[in-house]
Amino acid sequence: MSLEISWARPSTYLATETYTIKVYRSTSTESGDYTEIGTATNGKATNFTDPGGARNYFYYVRYFDSSNTQGSIILAIVDPTIRELRLSQEVNEVLPNIVKSNMDTNMRQARIAIQQALNAINLASPTTSYTIDSMPRSYEVAVKLGAQIFVYSEQYLGIAIKDFASSEGGISLTKDRGSRISNAIDKVLNYYNQLLKQLKLGEWPAEPVGLGSLAMSSPQGRVIGMLQCIVIV
Image (cartoon, rainbow, N blue to C red):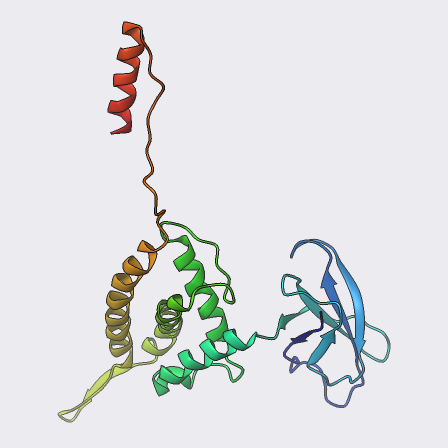
């Protein structure tokens, strides 16, 4: 299937230089071998269409200058699905301006946070293995809340470390946006934890599950069975 990928053009590459951009795709795992699948026709391009792409592939590009000197690896990302893009936009829309202003313009941070939130939900007992596109609609609220928590946490230190308190001539100035973000994290986290418990209840098996041992007729067997029960309890 046709798949769009994109990357950020490094500022180190001069606008006056002519570059050839070669695109590489994984052949197995992320850290395995890669094969060249094409060349971007425009040296200033930041996207490429892979006609044989798949969302489980990994991609990178390399810039080659006019003397064919090879540049370093630049990671490329697969463009989001419609659902992933919608969830990322919905997360971005509810973020406070102070946080939103520190986000990248293509919402890559929001996309990463959405995936991190889903990973955390999948790990909660009972474990699941949903992808963004396969998860039930009922998961969306928890995923968006979890994404907010990840975004707030990542932005907190960068904002809090810049805040200050000063006093001069009897006038006190306090700039403490960090504590407000910390309070927001606590409130969202409290609601998120309660929601997560209810959400995962639906993943438990509908039929009862038991644990036991084979019956043994001999006295020794009955003693061993009793010991096993004690250990299990």
